[in-house]
Length: 481
Image (cartoon, rainbow, N blue to C red; front, side, top):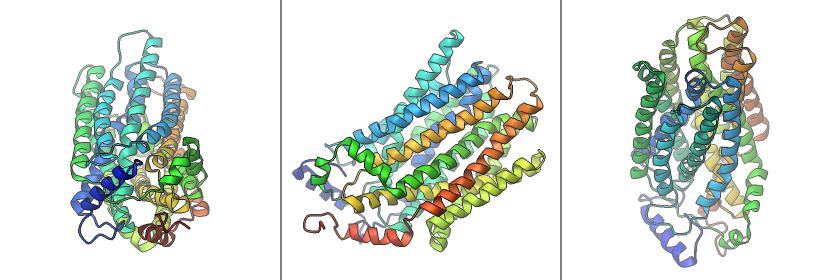
């Protein structure tokens, strides 16, 4: 819930306890499927705004706004690194909220920020008629502002999961609905965005109108999550430990905990692989396959199958555990992507292999959200300090750096291989596009699997012990060791 004076803390704890469904055993809250599905709508809404920047902003800036590819790589790299350092600040601000109302600690921040994020999403797909330098500066400013507001939207949304339930199976199901929401948004934007753009004679107008449509859908998704989810777990905080800790101490805590470090390192590779795939798809379809109109079709197949795949997450986790499930998906994705690079370019083999790779990656990406909730509880169990916002900020830090890596790989390869917008590309450029689309993701997923296999030691059995200790009141007065 929040960090505050004892009287207020008790009142909020009572409110939270009153929200817990009947027959819940403290942290072992059993959520209704309605609430779990509505939680997934948060990432559904998020995807309508986040995925546009990852999949289409490179194309918009280079081909429509005529910003050089090297400059676009610089814009993405700098702004994502800037955003990464803003995440801990956003997490600290959210963790420091003291006056918590009946709507909880995280939900109001998420909802207000999502509206601002929608406005900024539209702004990023506009460009004033200024000099080339002015366009670059506008792109920097708009995307930096977008990234800052995104932190205040995504961090409270992600943090909310850890205070909705502490039950392992419930969390895996929430991770599934969240990943389903994310892939669902990718599916819709992947199918609908380009056709909307092509409806208009002017690409500037097309991108602008498409961004408005997607931003409105994003707000609706977040509103569904906000109206139907609650923060059920009555968190008891070790206020004495938290009073003595400084902001720098929290940064040290989250970056020196081995499970979190492992998830951070793994995420650098998985998210950069996914974003490189998304950014290069429109280029690959237009130039390597010969038609930009194929992009919605390929995305529809790839992302539609991914939705089916992630519905298997709860069953796979129950059968094999989170760690083995994630490693299996990463290895399958690695093999499919590397094979796709080696095989000569062909529409049918490309679609089959890119679909297998994307479905395989969607599974560990979904499991990751359950990993992070587990790490929050591990940190509280280990040292008595619970900081949901700053922990998710550290995790988001890795996602932002991964997005910067993807931008450097995507735009950098276009610049290095002599890409010329809207022209027939030379063979070197075509090979570069294919390498970014398939080779880089294949190598990245293989490295992610190795990191998870050798360094992540927070097994499901270990977490059950941790959850039991926390549910029995570890770190509460009289139980502090």
